[in-house]
Structure formats: structure tokens, C-alpha cells
Amino acid sequence: MSGPDLAILMFFVLLGLIVLRTPIAIAMFIVGAIGMAQLTSFSQLLIFLEAAPVSRTASYSLSVIPVFLLMGNLAMRSGLSSVLYEAARNWLGHRPGGIAVATIGGCAVFGSICGSSIATGATMASVALPEMRKLGYSGALSTGCLAAGGTLGILIPPSIILVIYAIITEQSIGDLFLAALIPGIIATFYYIAAILIYVRLKPESGPAGKRYGWKERFRSLKFVWPIVAIFIIVIGGIYSGVFTPTEAAAIGAACTGIIALSRKTSWADFLECLIDTAKTTGMIFLILIGAEIYASFMALSELPILITDTITQANMSPLAVIITIMLIYILMGAVMDGLAMIIITVPLFLPVVMGFDIGLSEEALAIWFGILVLSVVETGLITPPVGINVYVINSMADDVTLLETFAGVIPFVISDFFRLATIISFPAVALWLPGLL
Amino acid sequence: MKSSNERFDDNRGMGLFVRRMALAGGFVLVFISAITVVSVFGRYVLGAPITGDYEIVEFGVSLAVFAFFPYTHASNNNIVAGFFTSGLSKNVQNIMDMFQNIIFLVVVCLLAYTAIIGGIDKFNSNEISMFLSLQIWWLHAFGVVGLTLLGWVTFRKIIKWEVS
Image (cartoon, rainbow over the protein chains, first blue to last red):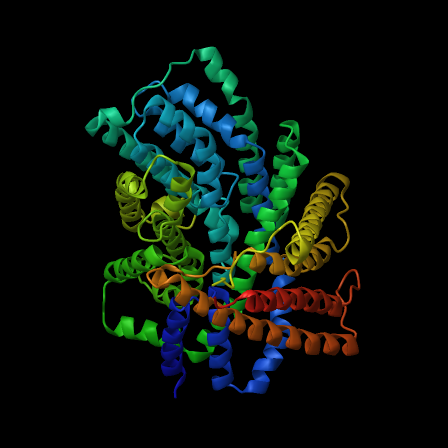
């Protein structure tokens, strides 16, 4: 059997294993190991396994992942979400739908120091949800805006998904972070627009809240500035090359830790923060170990080259190709985890995208594609049937049915499609800041 | 019928042990973050970073990650796409999960075995890190310990499973 044939067969085996409840890391490992043993020999595979998994865990470039997770979890456990939420509410809450808009704003700022979406949504929900319900916000709008707002956690840098994309595609983390910034801001404004349209159509779902005076508004900004400062140090430091990503993450974690201390975060909370970091880090690194052998097999099989050649010969326009890939991602993202989806498919699709002749360098194409992938992964977090954010937020609202929450995210899913269309039509929104045009 | 994927109790026995191990790994992570901050401070303010800070980070992260693996699995945090089988009965799902844990155990054993072989190789060739002369085989030793415990957690999951 030729390399590409074997790879196609093994790809279906991989999907089969995933459907049969194999942990995704293990499924990738099995498929990669069998494929590699077929293409080389069993003894070659053993030699590969002697060093690869261990050195994968002891990699400086990957060390940024647990440190960013630590930073995000510190931010979550220190109750920063409540001060961010209060600040946003004091400024915006008195308009119709204002508390929902404030929630989105709070999520966006929180997302600038937290790279995970479930954490962002859940921590914001703990403060915003009770208040929205008390004010008479509908279950659909209050849970919908939290589920969607949480996704800003991964779109706005730092973003764990982007770090992993950067590592598997060997692109610059700093460039990707900067590239995600404007799309993140666009996403925030599209979400706000979605809320404003929604409350115009259904005014009873989001009544206006209390109006706060200017003194209270400015006083509530006290904890917002440090977060903005951390964000600028971390992102600016990585991009300018002053810090390595790991160093920036460590400095960010230290600053967040100082804020947590000043807010009298308890020892028990600190331990929980370490445990949360442990769970997610263990999960990601097991996937990365499986992914390494899977990606080595895919490269060895030459399937990616075959796919690229086929698409080039079919003379499809780049736009048609990218829309096809995005549709595949939206479908996959609806039923499986975004991280796994990226690791399984990017080695196949990226070479195709990098072959586009649309006046952009290969590097720029890789960065642009990364932002597109990130954007669809984000949508996958709130689309049925799997939409993990919807389940997490819904589980926090006792009196809201799951159906209401899924109905509540519809306006946000629509605005996600507008955002995706914007990034596809204007690659400049991603590429202008890192200077890749 | 008892699921093989029931969460371990964090407060006693094996569950408590792997939780403490994960916490220890968490402290290692805090330590390497602190070293990194000190080293950056040294580089820009004092003109002298900590020698081999990258190596400390690499060894620390490796140690931490292997300390996390058993807890991640004990608390069911490894990603499984449960959507496709969510329509099946709980019994069928449990049987599938039991088989998945057997596969998991086989993979973990293979990883531990190759890590041992690789470690012996590094030990014999006396491979060391560039700045601090740290022994590379230590990484394999961390790995084998972490993977062995991960295997033990998986084994416990398999034997916990029972048909009613």
C-alpha cells in the first residue's frame, strides 16, 4: 500500500476510534504508531518512541502552555471577573441590554489575560448571571451572551489554541497573537451589535439597569488598568522579542499572582488553581505526544503533498477552497473538541492554504489561516450539539432550560459567521498589525 | 453496573495520592515561573541572567507534566468525543469505556517501556544538558514514574468496572 493510501485509510481508522470513545490523544497515537511501523519498520518506531515522547514534555517552546494556563487560572480564582464586570456595568448597564453588553465587555477584557474560553465564560457567569436574572433579563439572552462572551477568551490573545497552532505550524507566537487582536475586537463589537439588535426586537428580554454616577464609574476602573498593563507587557513583550513567550507568560502569571494576593485570594483557592492547571496541562500534553507521532506519520506518508497537488490541479479558486475548508471545520467543530480538530487537520490543510497565489507570503497565509481556524473553533464552542460553553453556562443557571440557552446563542452564532466572512474577505484585519501585508 | 470511568475520590486513597502529586507538579510550575521572572530581571536590570534558565524550565515542565498525567486521567479530563455514542445505553457506553481503558493501558505500557530503553541509552552515553550538565536520563526517570502511575490509575479504572 502506498503512503497516501495508507494515510487515508488510517485517517478513517482515527475517526472510527474517536467515534468509539477512544481518548483523542490515544487514538492519534495508535494511528500514528501503526502507520509509522508500516511505512518504516517496527524497530524504527521503537527507536522513535525511545526519545520523542519524553523530549516532547521537556521542550522550552511548549513550556509556555502551562504557564499561560497558570496565569488564566490565577485570574479566574482571584475574582478579577467581578471587578471587571462591575466596571463594565457601571459604564454601560443603564441602557437596554446594557448588562449583556457589559458582560461581553468584561469577557473581552478578562480574555486578554486568560487564554481559555470555558474559564472566561464560567467565571464571568458567576457574577453576571445572578445580576441579569435579578433585573429580569430573559434566560436566553443572559446565558447566551455568557456562553458567547466566554469564547472571546480564546480569540483575544493570549490564546492556548493559538500557541498550539503556532507550535505545530512553526509560526511565530507573537505574530499570531498580534494578528488575533483586531479580529478579537471585531468579534466583541459584532457581539455587542447582536445584543443591541436582539433587545430592539425583544425589549422585554433585556431591560435597562441602574444608572451609576461618574464618580462610581471612574472608581470602578481601579482594577481594569493593571489588567490592561499586564496585557500590553505580555503581548508587546513577546512581539517585540524582549521576552520569549514563556518569559512573558511567567511575568504575566507573577503580576496576576500579585493582584490575586492583593485581593486576598485564599490558600485553598490557590491550590485549586494549581489543580485546574494540572488537569488541563496533562490533557494537552497527552494530546501533543499523540499528535507528534501522528504528524510524523502524516508527513512521512506524503498525503499532504498529494492533497495539495490534487487541489492545485482541480483549479479551484482559493476562495472556494477556503470556504470548503471552513465548512468542514464548522461541521467538525460542532461535534468534536477544537484542539483535537486543529491537531488532526492542520497538517493536511495548511500546505494547501500556503500554496495559494493571492499576493501574500507563505508566512502571512499561515498566520491568516491560523486566525480563521481559531475563529471557527470558537464558533464550535457554542453551536449544537456539542457546544461545550453552552452546557457549562447552562449548568450554572438552574431556572434556564438548555433549549433556551441554545436559542440565546443564535444571534451570536450569526455574528460569528459575519466575523468569519470579514476575516476571509479582508485578510488585512489579521495581517496588518503584525506587519505581514 | 459500575462505570470504569467513575471519577476517583480526591479525598482518599489513590485519588488523594494522585491529587497531591498533581499539586506537587503545580508547585514545580510556580517555581519555574519564578526562576524565569528572576532570570528576566537579571538579564535586563543586572545584566546577568540565571545560567541555564531554559534548562531548568525544560526539566521542570517535564517533571510537572508527568506528575499531572495520573490526575488528569483519574479525574476524567482526557478528551473523549462522547457525542457519537451519547444515544447508546449507559451499559454499552460503560463496556466501551472499559475497552478504551485497556487500550489506554497498553499504550501507556508501551510508552513507559520505550522511555526506560531510551533512558538506559542516555545513561550509558552519559548525555547531559549544555549549560548545567543535567543528566538527560533524569527526564526519562520522571517519565517512567509518571507513566507507571498513569498506568496504575488506568488499571484501577479497569478493575473497578463490574457487571451488575
